[in-house]
Length: 113
Length: 110
Image (tube, each protein chain N blue to C red):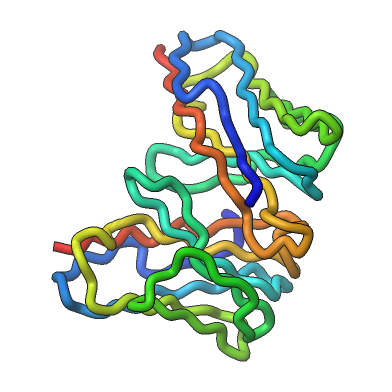
């Protein structure tokens, strides 16, 4: 158990819908990162939050947004879903940055039908 | 950004065999991590190894930062070792993200 908790584990939804993925970081970790793993894209960085503030952005679509709350949990919101958004979404956490060891949650497998 | 290359892309072994996986990176890094993605998709931390050598049971890893590569050794492989092995390094000195290699798909046959 990495200590990073993601919910739900599986999600099936229809095109055009909106979903929210949730992540609780390891105790003591201030940074949360979201990654997308598609079959043909590998692990792609989406966004980082540090202590409630957005720190870095990767290849995150405008239809996607995230936030980190005062209790440090984070949510990734995916809207106007398309078939191509089907993927495994990972949350990771670290103390401050990726210059320290990062731990990944079990992932949320999103299927858009 | 930093480039990470892993080799080989695929590896098939018989149970009990040894193997070496390689990770090359294009720039200086502050740390390097090895992960195992099991068939259920879970990413499991194997090593956090900025430099030097570490061992954990049948697995060991060596990072030579000055030459920009890392090696993961798996000895006496077991079927449960099957999955994808990723190495990952921080993108920049700020460490805002990890850049992953494409992975090595390992299959261990009984």
